[in-house]
Image (cartoon, rainbow, N blue to C red; front, top):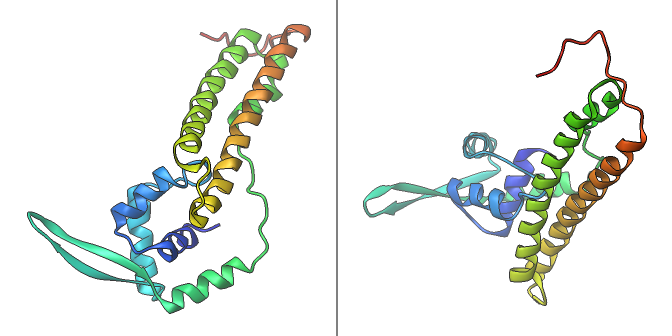
Length: 188
């Protein structure tokens, strides 16, 4: 998925400034898509040049004028074209899996430390998503929120599966023979 289509999707929901869009990435999409403020503004410039979005300038007292972006009819057509395309899984690039792959050649305590580090990260994210679920999603009848909940459920499942996998690997490691590679330089 291109960043452009994600921004178009957000603008289809409601017009917004670059700041609003960046905030949406942080608050609504963080469990499956990340974008920096710089990336968002750069993409908004491209989308404007392509005619997929336009903006109106909104004066603000004591601040620079704000650009409020809207999706155009051409932008809606592009989003619809993209929406009809089949999706493919995103390629995985995961350093931790490479570390596990060579774990039999490295000291196990280092791998266990890294797995515990990742458990902490995934536990914190899961807690964050569960808090969002409890605060905003439970019993909410608003159709937009129900669709957002579907994406949040994927984030919850993702973090839960990481935690389960980390637990399984940590439990298996004591039963595997540790044979650090003698040809590797000593590790700190």
